[in-house]
Image 1 (cartoon, protein in one colour):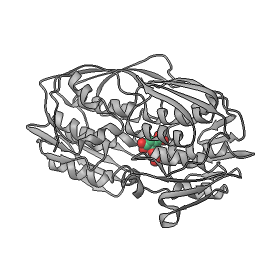
Image 2: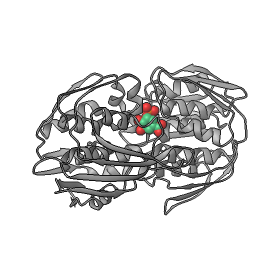
Image 3: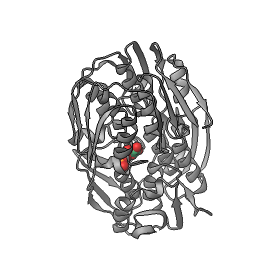
Image 4: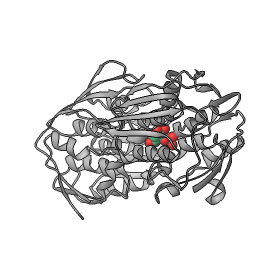
Length: 435
Ligand code: S3P
């Protein structure tokens, strides 16, 4: 599908972003291992989270929904999963594959996990290596680095492990595997990454302790079922935060957004770029801070980012690059080599596609150098099947002159099926064609 975008006269209105993707995955997985019925409200019905539900169903979990955002997971405890009859398909979802690997490592049966062409290119050795050290038998292409992966789990030993890169997916996989060991698993991260798994496991009654970047979990405990109201996804809200800053006549309110400090790097960065943001903290939702964000037209300044900020905004870097292209001065993004192994090589492709629209952006091995105040021009650009690249390009199209055509825009449904409907809600005339 091609998405055809022109800059609207104004960009105003109120949006409730969809449920958080990371939290939706975890709610389904942890619910499946709990003893009793977990109810999830505001579950993200994007393709990635639907892949998690499909895999869990194939493992014998009784799940209903999503029905108007509600999913019911009837968990029957840690040892209730059954050997799947066929290959588990994680689709485009790295979170599904990596977190599920942690669970499958604990199962005394054989399973095979695969996904789409993008996921089959993504590195899995960072998860399969430590899981093998815990005793799981895992085979895959390139010595266990690439899917399809087959797993014969069970009889896991606890592990003490320091992650070489900050990754919430790897951390979560090892914590989930830790549930199936007879002792204490200890994970240390180089920098804090999103901590939704830790929050949810604790809420379910797991014996889990966090000290700085060190997390301990004790295995073989009963998990209690939860009722989880998933807050809005800040990674989805980010597209409107940037669009609101860049458009000259913008005033957008985003309701019910997750404000977990391990995810709010985009807010801190935009504020440091002198964005006009008003944050109103609200009630905790699903064990996570949440609130309202109002954004209005801003005159942004470039800045340097890197280090511990990167894991707090890694998924927002494609759209942050759009902000930087229109900011005054230079923006330097370092320490983000992980972008190369996301749904696409986001360093090469973000730079290449934004350059087609007139951005002054130089890719680096671990980020970008972007010189601002470019005049963006509408162009024919391509998502390369990457949902966040598609939506970042749509934001660029909202502030470019002329018409922007985004090829392969259907992938937006991976994380934000309602993106074009929300654009329309703000007054954007959205056209689509079959391409
Ligand atoms: C996620 C963690 C991050 C992020 C991804 C979702 C999660 O990946 O980029 O979109 O839900 O745990 P890494 O763990 O590879 O950093």
